[in-house]
Image (cartoon, rainbow, N blue to C red; front, side, top):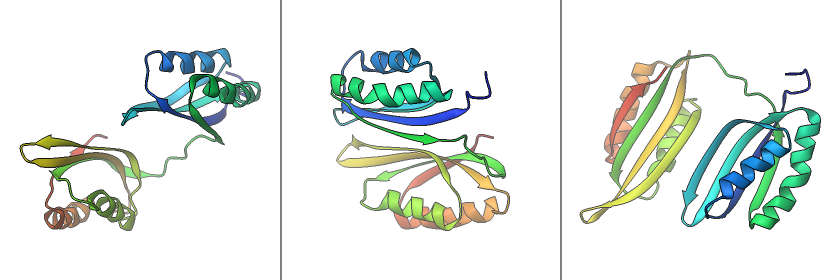
Length: 177
């Protein structure tokens, strides 16, 4: 890698799901001489969503910026790009996942994410969905997060236990790093 290969861009594409769309987008990235550092795909409703973090030299990043809008229009995709830089990781003492489930109630995710914000803990990853079980719609959510050095994990868990009772959700914390 050259000294100029550290440029990064976040690319997002949204459109109607169909076979071959991932292949088309990853081929474009390859043709522009970019490297996929990280990516996520999700089907939300009937819409395909693809988020990629790309790296490359200045020429490669410029190439993707100029060719993606045209390719996106050809594929019927809404696309968006933003240049970025490498993520600066703050110091943390441990990484965890939190999985919770309960009867789907409006505002639960908002209250959980507010709890994290008030605790000064950034969420690294979040996935939530709902499913039908018997006569109820059940929500489930999985969050990944790092505990900063100055946060007492035991106090955090006790406070979350109180919140979980208020929200009527079952949960599991798992240490992952």
